[in-house]
Image 1 (cartoon, rainbow, N blue to C red):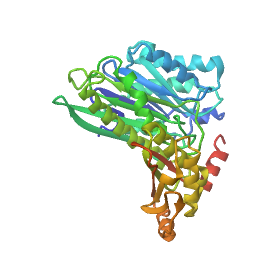
Image 2 (image 1 turned 120 degrees about the vertical axis):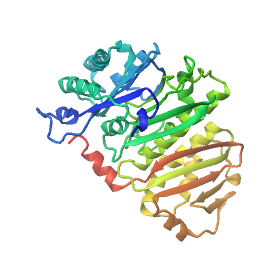
Image 3 (image 1 turned 90 degrees about the horizontal axis):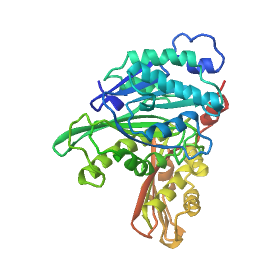
Image 4 (image 1 turned 45 degrees about the vertical axis):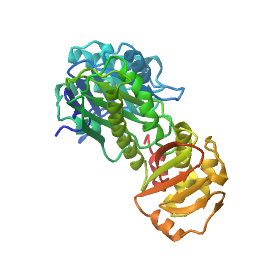
Length: 407
């Protein structure tokens, strides 16, 4: 079944198991039972493309290469490896990222600038390019319109489940599809995270549409996810539109553009929630909803502050109804705030109202903290701004995972 990035028409994906993480750690042969760790996504026609990348000043080689390739706006393929980030690898890292693009382009009869490159995994190790070269050949040879699920699995690192989303809509009387995949479990914090995310559509758009749409969509989806407060060197969110649906090209600012943007946002938000839900060591998803902020940007600040608070996350993990930590996080968020207009609810229970705590059923809050999803609502009473953010609890298992990451 076509799901994720192969749900829209004209996209195919292929995967291969190269043993990249094992080679990175010093292995001399691919381990038996090696799972797929390299994926290629191919569009039958050139795409209008846009991307946003990590705000970390230490950027991995693939990030720099993609920023250059996107300037030509002729993208038709993507190659992604997991197990090795190709970050902090100097000139060799850039040569390897460029070679990945060239190897993929040669196999698909494209020009290297038509190929985007992503890597994720251990920082500071050189890519095992012999294994990568073989993997690219095998992945290109296995391209299929049913390869979306396999591709989502191949890009995983510490993720426990593959993450895909898709939807269909009608634009101008034509059925259009949007699909996506992402990976992310740790080193997750705005802006972007150890997160690779790809949303594709078969809608026809005018040149430059994706580049204009991708940042506002990221701000309302992937930039509202936080797991542990660390922003990675490789974070990338790419948006591709190949026009295979055959609709009249959509112009930025049109009613059709708004419709398509909302569909892409819906897919991106679904993927973002899955990242938070699958946070390293996570047992609970935290959804923070803010209303009444002076504007949407300040609402996003407030929501992210609560979702990323280590004290809030540990309280929820331990079932401690300590609502004071939520109010505290709102206070240092950077959003304009007046305590005498603030109301906070946890799992539907009002715990703070207009300047002071209220008599509340804290046992009900404690029981809510035992559920797989916890909702926190805050009404700031200062305007019409609203936003959501997603996070997860912080558990002992998170420490174990990251204490042994390279070993």
